[in-house]
Image (tube, rainbow, N blue to C red):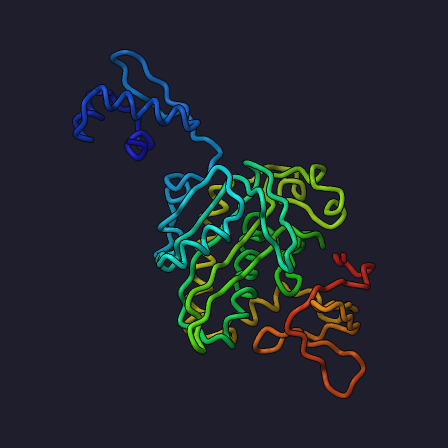
Length: 327
């Protein structure tokens, strides 16, 4: 019914005939749409007209105009859950198909790297996790996060109409004007030397007011709406992101990180910056970022004869006086 109402106003009799249901069932469908936030006008004998859709990431809203072949074709929507990654992980273990995607309007226990929480207020941002079953070795899997960051960066640049202020902070953040606007979290299961399935979680701050961030995030995070001074169409952003993400994930699965590396380098503004990397046991290493190796490792000039390869860690940019740089 919703698809038909999107096309043009329609009488109850026409809807009843086209859908093969009674007029009473048509009325119940309309009331159900209204309960979900759709504004549907109707007059006795005058039919129904869809006036507006709610700002919700309902499957029928995101998938209207979605051009992907497999990503988010099975889209599971929740008003509020603990974590989209947790739910997608459960679905993956239960055999959910490649591309099955979970979205939520809010998360009560949004997850970031290293056990950190991800601030997830209701009805403002995009919280999305997808089940992926790529033909990847465990050695190739880590660069999935980097190509996902490419997709987010390109989507943000398209949304803003400019790439001047968009950057990727290794290993899993995307920034606007040097402030975090997106976090990416990947979790995987292994089968011998290959990936069984992985869950790719992407959280993008779209319409949250940066002044509402918890105090510990306020100095280093932003949202798209705060940055540009205008709200974001969340449904349109999700569609654009899923389209770009599907393209880069397909290329990554077929040919690896190599063909995508130039696209990553376009957004990697850490090169030549002085940084500090803290690993999980608290060891800190300082040096100058040289770039990214073929397997996604960060190359760091510490003054030794050879560049140090960093596979994981928490990065702090030390030369914050550089244009666009922030910790």
